[in-house]
Length: 107
Image 1: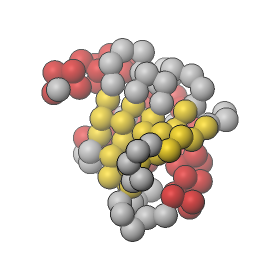
Image 2 (image 1 turned 135 degrees about the horizontal axis):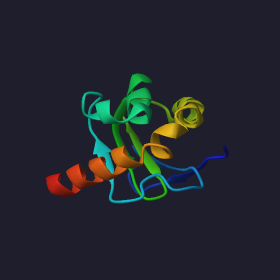
Image 3 (image 1 turned 30 degrees about the horizontal axis):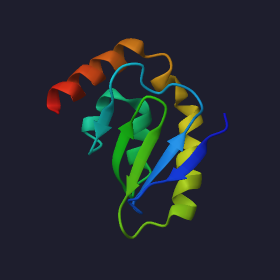
Image 4 (image 1 turned 90 degrees about the vertical axis):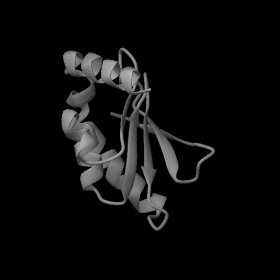
């Protein structure tokens, strides 16, 4: 899978574009590894260390890092994890809907 990246106005956040749907309904945001328990991909991203936030949108994943981390090395590690866990946003339809409802309720 080819994943594009896009910078955001926030230098601590980068958008990853996998070229297919990530969330069919709503969005999901994880601010800690404990919150990421519902998503194998979000958990794997937090396990890389230096990650402070993971956000799933309709067709993207944005990842925020701590201030000391360097994007050059971190982007490579994120891209290495994302394809191996792609099932977490393509096959878990009920999870996506459940997470979206939860996120919408938290907003």
